[in-house]
Length: 224
Image (cartoon, rainbow, N blue to C red; front, side, top):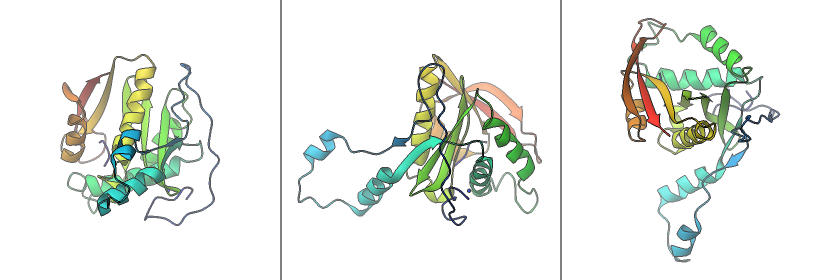
């Protein structure tokens, strides 16, 4: 899912290589959006209400294992190519009906340039989601804007997107922002449902995407 990896590897796409050093960035507000975060710890209420002999359904076990293994951290200045690969595999799967890859090749250079600038821009924070040490998604954010959220297709519907989304909005809210905006492809029904189910609403804005066949982005806003 996306709105419009080398180390660590993109799950199912590349072989893994050596682990990269994690950067330590702290927002001026004192809130650190890049702090490593282990996710999915079951609540005390959930633990206390389950009988010790209860058989947990297989899908709950799978989700529980994924939640326990999911980890978020800041990208380093050397991981722009990781972001490129995640965005590419997500976009080709999610936007193929908008940008047929046999007709409109993915704009690798332009996208890589975007992320090279973003990871070196102190005003923007990019957070990477890792599952068992493989990169599976990321979110990019700045004051009042969720600039990007991409998850590799094999992890769609498994909680990675919501985790990144909530992480981003928490950070933006802690900056003191009262609302947040984003752009999403008008024809990206999956992403639009994802955001609308979380309280985002169309704000009336629209723009033309600068890549052929030049589809339209629509704007969404949420109150924080």
